[in-house]
Length: 217
Image (cartoon, rainbow, N blue to C red):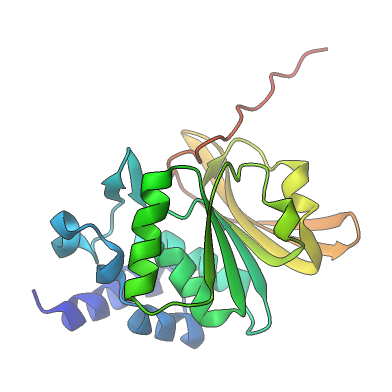
C-alpha cells in the first residue's frame, strides 16, 4: 500500500466532501500519522471510511467524523483541551498538535496503555492520558477551553458543561441510535450556552454514558 497516496485519497475523497476545508485541519491530517495509531492487524485499513476495532470492543471513529469535530472546535495554540474516550490516542494527537495541552480520559486500562504507547512512539509530549470514568468530565483538571467526547452520549451532562471556560467549546455526538446529532456547544457567558447542530451520524456509546432518564409526570 502506498501510504501517502492512501492518506491523500482519504483527505480528498472522505474528509473534504464532509465540509472539512480548514487548511490548518487538513495540514494536521498529513502531519499526524493515522497509521501509527491503528492496531497492526488493521494497518491496511488505516485510511478507510469506517470504524476500526482497537480491542476490548472499542473502535476508532471514522476519519471524517474526527476531522469534522476537530474543525468545528477551532483549537488554538493556547487551548487546554479535554478529550473523553481516548481510544487509540489518534484524536488526542490531532488535538495536541493544535493546542497547548490535552488531558484525555480512558475508562479501560488496556486501551489507555495502548494510547500511551502510540503517543509516545509518535513523539507527542503534551498529552496526559488518565484512566477513569470521564462520562461526567474530569473536573479537577478543568476548566477547559475545548472538550471533545469521542463516543456518543444520550444527553449532555450538566457537569460537563460546567467545565467549560467562558468562550470554551464542546463537541459531542448526542442521542440514541438510530438518531444522533453532532453538536457544538459554546459557553457564551457564565452558565449560558449556545448549541449548534452540525450533522447526523451514529457512533458507539461512550463507556459509562448513562441512559437518558424517562420523562414522567
